[in-house]
Length: 267
Image 1 (cartoon, rainbow, N blue to C red):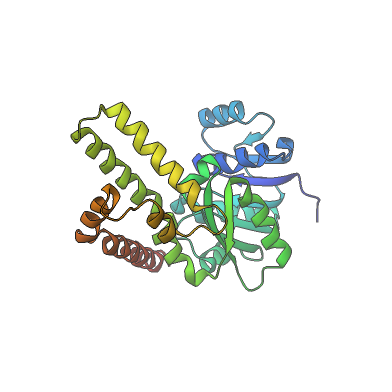
Image 2: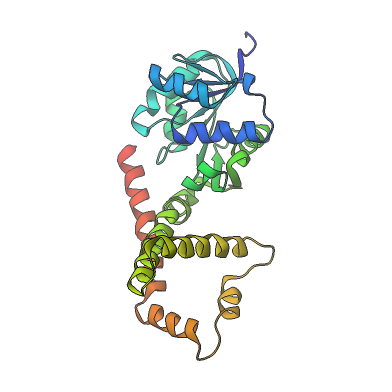
């Protein structure tokens, strides 16, 4: 078999593919070893300008490994194109595309599946990773090394991916909804909108940083800022009375169930 022409092939130069490549370069990866495939000529020129040193082409070529970051509807063609190059392994970041589907589209390849979330676009993603039973440990290590460039990676069974989709995949939207509501609440309380936005976004970002500290516990953090009979206690009482906690549980369950339904339809 001929040697690889490039180290990494990325099918799709959209937001996720570009974020992954950008994260790798920021961590010291050699851009000359990365090739991105994008059929649109204007987008090829744009990405080549944004990611200096990365080769952006119209057709795939053989690589040590490939990432498929296209829309699921384009997944079959993209996976078959990768298989046709002789590339030995493939990592999909396509939502709802299962390992059995990938194995059908790219027979003979080591196939892996990842579920990133949108904070990966700013290097703060949380990504679940799985592979078929035939995938070697070195293939999982390879995929994890790529995904770690845009955040944190967890190896999980594919059976957990619907729950992952409902929680972390859809989760940023829940936080954004909370942010929208807090901004409006600040405005209604008399703050100028720019001030309300700055306070809201900074509060959410800062709270997130506290949560990822070693040993952090959300219940303890909440208790630390809640004085008996104080302002925070009054606000939390309203949220509990409105069953916000239960609504979030139901939202994750509904998103996970929808993920299961979509996976069944795709099969």
